[in-house]
Length: 190
Length: 190
Image 1: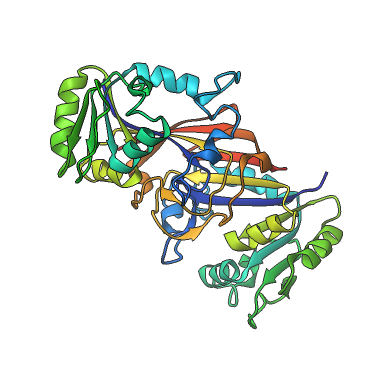
Image 2: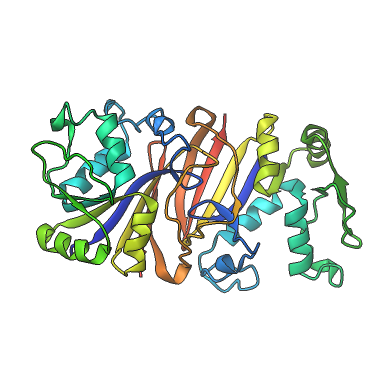
């Protein structure tokens, strides 16, 4: 059955990005850089399988702007690697990646989620982040699964993974394994 | 070879305790309460094995005072479950648990570490926490291993697991597995 999934890399101490909003700490982990796919064992292989099963994507504006800038997408729109329709939550006017199915949204996540469910059909819905947007999906009872790939890094500070208090009656650990240097954990949201 | 090990339970998002310094969120996880050992699979079994191999213990004052109060140790000193000599880092005068080998310390962790190595002999040294004390051992190049048992909980805020920036060239994931509802990860510090 199709699910709404938060799937992300994070530091051991639960940060998506460091205080300078950088991911350099992630890309220097063996297997952590999408541009360097030579590594024998990397969560990016599994992530590719996950992405192939995704029919709708949602992210916050900070995440979107980070990808825009990092990949120079306005000049190189084909570096946008997602085929599924993608919603970006923002209260500002942001540029769309030319020729890609990017839809801007604001307000209640439930309305967007309903559209995502319809568009994705029997495929999954991927909430990319950031943490507070994911929290809004959780608050609305719309999050089914959390997959975190912990890089072997402590950051001490940065953008929080999921800034909510969610106790154990809401979460069931369904898998914990190492993939190369990453610890990959899956939780079912109850 | 004997090691200096940080071994702790934590939330998924890297907090040792919630903002009220409580561990209730941990004790309500199946297998997370030391007083309720009926659970079939719990990290506490492995923790018992770990503890049997520990010859010296070190903790910060907040951790020590939490145990003192939670276990009512001044009235029930035999609830102090550690046989190994235990150092408590504090700048204040704190009561010792009557009849137990508790040694108060302050200042540089290196001097205490040298004593711990001598006392522990071929047994391991356990740094209990909190995070900043562990960080001081890391800063001094004295931390060999980090073992974290992630409870299926997000806290959003609280006492940090290890408030340092430690990049992947310093850490090697050596094990990742589930034990009941806990994700148990071991890192070698390089």
